[in-house]
Amino acid sequence: MKAVQYRKIGQRPEVVEVAKPQPGPGQVLLKVTAAGLCHSDEVVMSAPDALGYELPMTLGHEPAGIVEELGEGATGIEVGTPVIVHGCWGCGVCEMCAAGKEMLCLNGMTSPGLGSDGALADYMIVDTPRRLVPIGDLDPVRAASLTDAALTPYQAILSVLPKLKGGTTTVVIGVGGLGHVAVQLLRELTGTRVIAMDVTQDKLDLAKECGAHEVMPSGPDAAEAVKKLTGGRGAHVVFDFVGIDKTAELAVACAGVEGHVVLVGAGGGGVKVGFFTVPSNTTISTSLWGGRAELGQLVTMAQRGQIHIQTRTFSLDDVPKAYQLLHEGQIIGRAVGVPSL
Image 1 (cartoon, rainbow, N blue to C red):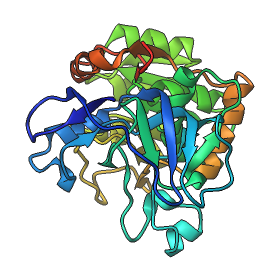
Image 2: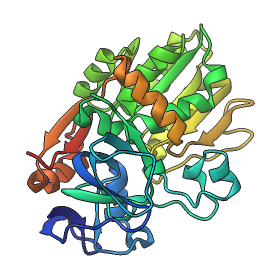
Image 3: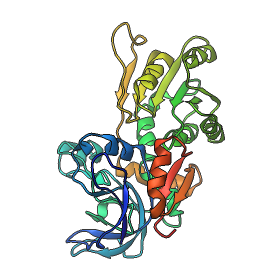
């Protein structure tokens, strides 16, 4: 079968032929229908040690597919069911996993495409049926990226939801695969005013289409513009979906007293936090992915038409080109690999 793999440190992904996998006891064989591409894949491929992952590795941690075959003892799902895959594969027994927070597994989380072979292939193995979330008649191309591009901002928003009351202001920095969904979720879940920032006009246009009340370039004057729009107060909540030093510093600059800055992007940056460097009583937190229960909630929202992921599709042969476009910032919304193309 065909697969897109990261094979050697420092090299770009390759399309290769590999053997079709067979499900072992308790496992599920999925015929892949769609798989989203993510900046996290770029982080892995730019790291000097591939973050410790064993290579070669098939990429793709946003899977949608149809259950093709059940391994011995696998129960709870029927062959032929269209599903997406919750990508946070924890141990299942530590206190975080027991609380439904497998993304915070104390024994180390793995994921398809981030530690094991992923979904950018004709078929993939899922280690247990409990990772699967049925999607009914949802378009798999739209549904695949619910697993990360929607789940990650959803979890981040839920972590500060009590602060997002009517009359508040929220800033979203970075209107990419995650940020454009965050804007929609904020509009659906809260009464906050949403200010979206990015460096390109096409992404600001997308933010406006997704419901942002205000859009502006994330340049040196952005924080002052936020202060002006809020009568000098600053934002109550700021989400940074980029995660480099400049955006983290901008996030803090946009925040007001008793504000909350959530650093979500995996850009490798950060910000200095101290008594005199952030507004008084400001909270700085990070947010990693999300739980399976929350993924089920997002599927229901998508089925009701409350959220919509902007996608651009590519055949598996063209996925390396898609990663290059993603690297260059030329993908609006989410790139999705589709094996049937």
